[in-house]
Amino acid sequence: MKAVILAGGKGTRLTPYTKVLPKPLMPVGDMPILEILMRQLKREGVDEVILTVGHMAGLLRAFFNDGEQIGLRIRYSYEDHPLGTAGPLALVDGLDDTFIVTNGDVLTNLRVSEMIKFHKEQQAAATIAMHHRKVRIDLGVILCNGGPEVVGYIEKPTYDYAVSMGIYVFEPRVLSYIPPGEYLDFPNLVHKLLGAREKVVGYSFNGYWQDLGRQDDYEQANIDFEQMRSEFLPEE
Image 1 (cartoon, rainbow, N blue to C red):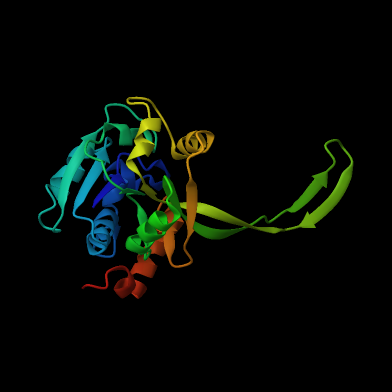
Image 2 (cartoon, rainbow, N blue to C red):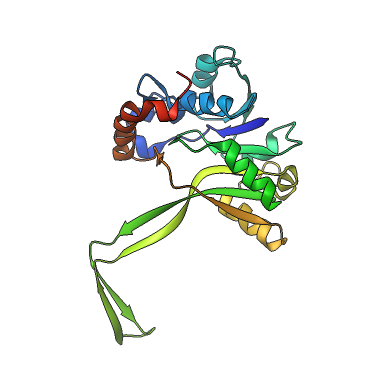
């Protein structure tokens, strides 16, 4: 089984740390977040990982090499210019069976093998891992009728959203919707798939998930990893 890990971003929201390290090499506990992710994927049956790299690609390659120390085959796909989150997939060879795509900065205890089973049961072209997040607005929200007339007032409401976890399962035919060498993000790819009447489903996950995009999220992830290490890396 193959997994594509997106590791080419600049991680600007984690500045100044990412001035000297690519975000996937940011340490969580005693190892980079990307190493935690790859060890989890190996446990779930993945034997080959393709890292899509750009920013500070040399550091990533120097650290992971061919993956022998983790027990995986690792190869690298280079993008000469930014291609978005979905665009780099068009450069990857050999994705001829169901495959996984994930961001390289996600801390979660999701079991990818269970997500793949769900994907196949649904006979979907694409499956998106979803997590429910509550967003609190610390202001009074005013509802208008399209003009100046107020029709409602909600004091500090909380909204519940299903958000993407940055983890996907794709069938190879999805690649035909990604033009080689062109910039494309995942929301645009999903719209393309829906427009072509391809089946796209969401896999709801209620366990632990943290995106390491912001400094406070990164700090919280380190605390949680130390407290829940056996849930993230049970084979240790």
